[in-house]
Image (cartoon, rainbow, N blue to C red):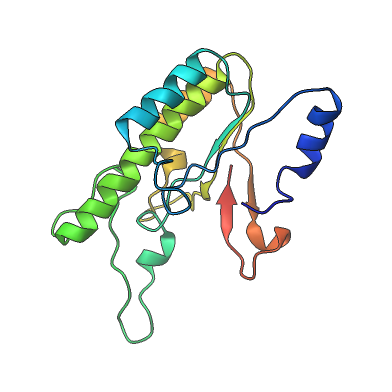
Length: 178
C-alpha cells in the first residue's frame, strides 16, 4: 500500500521494458476490488490460469485469528477467542452472529487467497501469504498449521518465513509469517 513497497522490483522490471500493473485488492480502498465478489474472483482465477498474474500476495484479515483474543485485558474484558487450533476455519460455538459472520468472511477470503496462491505459484511465479505467526501450541489457532495451507505449501514446495514487523517499521512487535 505504500508507494515504496514495490519500488525496487518495479524499477528492475521497468528497465527491462515490462509494464507492471499492481492492484491492491481491498474493498475498503476500492469497492469493486473485492475478492469475495464472484465476478471479480472469476476474473482473477482466469487471469491466474492464463499466467497473466506474475506475482500474487495476500494478507487476509487477521482479526478473528489473532492470538491476542486469548489474552484477556486486566479488567477481564476484550474480544473473545473465535477459532480453535484444531479447526481454524470454523467459528467456535456460542458466538454472536456478528462474530460468526466475521469468521465466515475471514475464512472465505483465506480460501480464495490460498487458491490464487496455488494457481499463480504453479508455473513458478512468486507468491506470498502474510498472516500472524503460528504460536505452535494450544489454544492458539493459525492458518500456518492448517491442512489447506500445508497442502498448498507442499504443492508449491514453498517455505514459511517468520519475523517481527517492528523490524520493518511497525510500532509494536507483531509476530508475522509469510
